[in-house]
Length: 602
Image 1 (cartoon, rainbow, N blue to C red):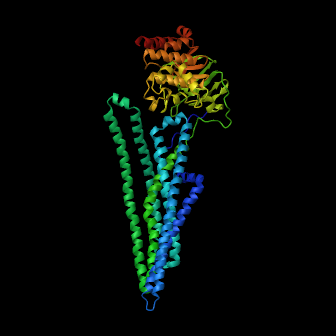
Image 2 (cartoon, rainbow, N blue to C red):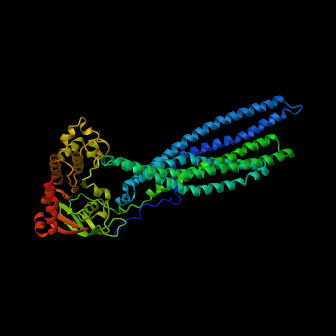
Image 3 (cartoon, rainbow, N blue to C red):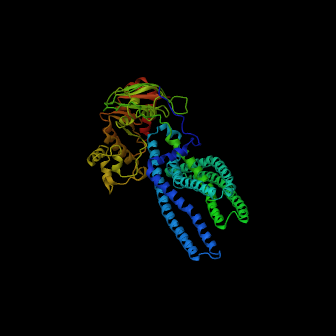
């Protein structure tokens, strides 16, 4: 028995260690990281040399006032110190440029890796995951969440490293310069770290909620744009505007909540820094009055003290960036760590070229979160080349059967065999590459008509594409466009009619030359002439192939080799049209009320 569904997407709340895992992506870019942080260290060292040079200048200037002092020597010291300060400033500028450029480049590389990882994972996730996850949520994670993480790698991580370098280096210098004043500064560090940890713990879930609400806003926008024709047709613009306004208000309220917290954080941090500065002024002034500290040493100490207070001042900024990055990293790894229930077994075999024999053997299936099976103990055999018509009311299980064939879902019990191979024992790619699918809702992609026909076979020649289009009765209308096969179809095929999109979808399936077909042959939305062309194309497509058709036309039913009548997830009748018309009251009722009724109405 196969596991039916995973536990679904995680609820908001980042997995532990998510930020550390995200930073681990830097491991692939060690050379860039080494250059970045090497340049940062060099820039920091040149920055830390300046206070010592300032002390030398002040000491040189002070000696010039002593009677009998060598003024020329003092002037030389001043000039040399000033030149060294300029030289160190230039060096720091060069190293800072290298660090900034390389950190941005590295962060872009990490973002590139993560976006590709997310997209690759999304391509492989099973349908059950999409049943539980909104499109807007996935889009935000691949865009905004990755960008927040990239910003932290480019700026926040560098600022954190710079802060630690300055703190450690400065404390060492101050300890050797004046350990008594250094002891005055030390109590500020645990206070600052406590603030850092406290605000980080508070803000992280708040930023997580921001991303969730941003995803909700994106979902509303995406759904509205995708269904804009329906919105306008039903004059629902005011309702949609209100729905968007509600989600936008929720997002703004959460962002304001975070702003209130950080509006408190920054004044607190600066208060701590000011207290430290006041303490140094008091105790440093006492040492000057006591004769144990000269003016040059005090000025050097004061400048180095800035290198302690500067990281403290950056603390709020680092906390905000880190909290956002941690929340975004958690959401990213929710996708990357999602269990894919439909995957290849470790020993999955390549499905050889099939003849098209399909067997459902005691198949039971239920969707995630539902205790009632959608299919119950379904068994049947389709021989190679047969057409199997699936007939039944909405919710009877027709669509579920065609979803199980290419392993969009896996059966909870029983087995599905193609040419004697259990579909769970063969690789997904080798299975789906031998199945052609034409559904009622035709999905085309931005690009040319040729690109869409060759979607399943990008290596197809122009002659093969044209042959498939001719077989699908699409060639003539394609040539009617000024650009022919190079005509842009627009988003989701917006520039084509429903019948044209359907015939391109048939050509796309024909190009694969599959032995197994899955068809929803609804043509209720097209005119009679278009319906005739589509039916001709479908007849050519189905010839010699095993076909599963959700029957909505009399011709499909009359020509089917086997008709399966489903009701509440079970096969309640099977046979040919003549057999069922005579033996099955359910089939006779569907036939007369739905199929013949549809033709009469049309």
